[in-house]
Amino acid sequence: MTKPAAKHLRTFLIVASVGVAIGLSTFAWQQRRPNPTHKYSARSSGEAKNWQAALRVKLSEKLKIADLLEIERDLALKPKVIATNRVSGITIQTVRINIDERLQSHIFLSIPNDRSTPVPAVVCLFGHGSNGTQVFSAKSEFSGLGLELTARGYATISVSLSGCRPSLSRTRAGERLWKLIRCLDYLESLDFVDKSKIGCAGLSMGGEMAMWLGAMDSRVKATVCAGFLTTMDHLLDFEKQHCPCWKIDGLERLVDFSDIFALHAPRALLCQSGLKEPNDQFPVTPARSAMLEVNKIYKDLGASGQEALQVHDGGHVVHLESALKFFEKHLPVAK
Ligand SMILES: [Zn+2]
Image (cartoon, rainbow, N blue to C red; front, side, top):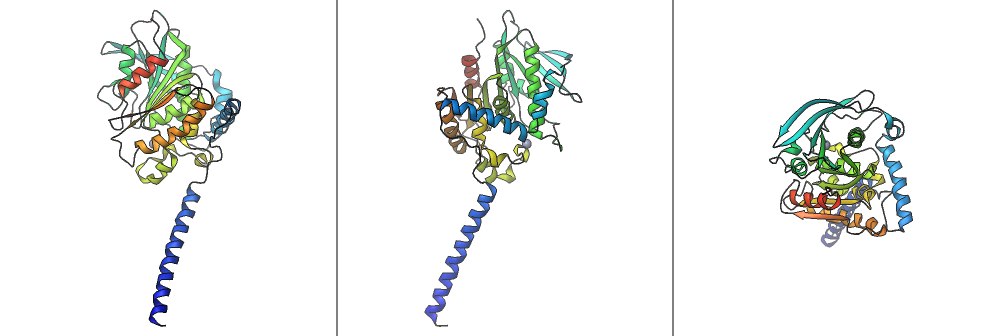
């Protein structure tokens, strides 16, 4: 081969191999993340409500709790108070309730001192490794929101989400969600709780479960989701840094997280994202792009402004001040 011919061949091979590499990586990406089939796009308010109703049915099947939602709603809670403690002037009861026919769980109920009129209530969800009590600690990443709310006249309920295991007939997220739905049943059974003012606040995996609870149960009127709003692409890009418990078979082909959050509309939603979040966790950039998607359905339902992304200076934490302000606005304590 002549020298110029060899040079041309070399150039051709380099260009071809780069092309093949790009092609393969695009192919791999497409394989990993095809366009979700039920992604929300702008539509009329009637169509948006139909989209929500149809997606809830699909998601209850993916979560493998459709049967529970239909059958077990009348299952008796049989609450039993196990302990009553005073923490910083607040009463916290440990209560055992029936989750389903087989499982019982301990929940923590904080009770405000003034219950002369029915009080609003907030389900508080810490992430991994919680026994359910960290939501009351100012030193935890939850910033003591549970305690601060109770001091301002709210009841709160908290529960450990560990111990929920996937099985052939259940998903882990479905098990966790069912436990939280039972917490709502319990709140509704308390005569000092105002059933029209129930909210939810969660951090990290607790934020993920706040997303699910508000999406699937319309009894939740206002949700704070801290340190979780992102895109599935972002979690998949940093797959090794994340616990895979968000994954449900077929979920990523159906929707993105923004679509699950879209099921909260037109109810109040505050997502919080910290500027100090590491890029491989829940940073602000994918949170912003997810919120732009969520904005669409609030606009279509004539409820723009009921949803917000609050970017704060902290890291993977609950931003206390804006969370309190949000609940005081959307679930005010009766004066
Ligand atoms: Zn996990």
